[in-house]
Length: 140
Image (cartoon, rainbow, N blue to C red; front, side):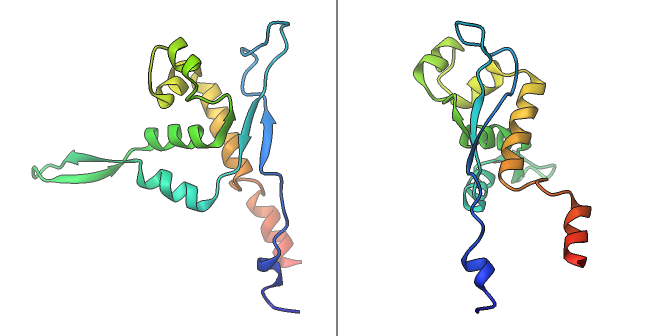
């Protein structure tokens, strides 16, 4: 058997998941509606990261690039959320904006946004395994 078997045949995990971000979003009958999120690949994360830089004027007057963490998190939420689709015209109009990223900011409260980012990050592999657990497994 090849030494690379594990890397050539990774365990498949569920790529999408429904999560309750808030109890505020209910249907006509009062049932809480979950968000549908998906795992992101590193390639997608790289693209989001590249799009999250902005130009700023440094102390010496020269333009430099600066990472914008707020933009990064909004783009992460936008790409990682399957439903609701923040780019739907009806949502954009309801929140008075043409930008899906602005819909996220207007629609979600701070804690709800944090819950969404945490759920997407976990599904994408961040904090899925506590570090101590991984270390113990590796030792055994």
